[in-house]
Length: 198
Image 1 (cartoon, rainbow, N blue to C red):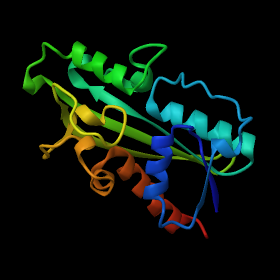
Image 2 (image 1 turned 180 degrees about the vertical axis):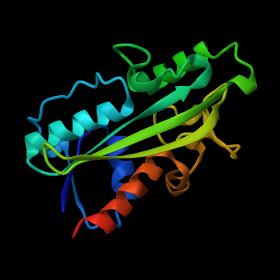
Image 3 (image 1 turned 45 degrees about the vertical axis):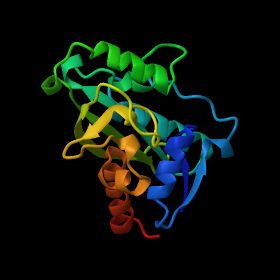
Image 4 (image 1 turned 90 degrees about the vertical axis):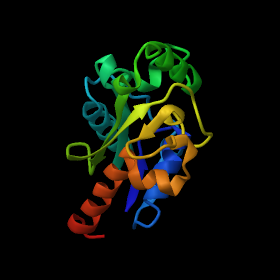
């Protein structure tokens, strides 16, 4: 089964390809379809964005498409950065600027007020009209300074519940086992094994 990943984010592609490596799928990316138009992520929820991207890419490529939308929700910030996680610091947003803005916004919060969750929705569009979603989340807290050099996004400041290390201080396999994206992809794995004749 050929599967198009509806993203150009290299780190996401690496993570999804790593977690799906044992599955009977051949992974393609938007780099294989350079003329595929950009899809505006203007949904109110992660699920809406993932579904929109998966359906659009399936329609353009004529192949099943897998789209992910994920991000960080800080409870004391009323769920921010939320669906704006990748663009939190504005037009010139990058991982460093986003983390800096988040830490600034949280600078006055006490330790017990720094709880957050990473959320991931994955949408599988089998064609341009049929889509199935999978969800994963992981609870944790936001540190006061970045630690670690692995991962991407907010990984250097996110301590998953029960751990004294950030996602960025963990190896790939350890993070995959507990991460929001890992959980959603394992649900996707189970679906493929149980429902689709490969």
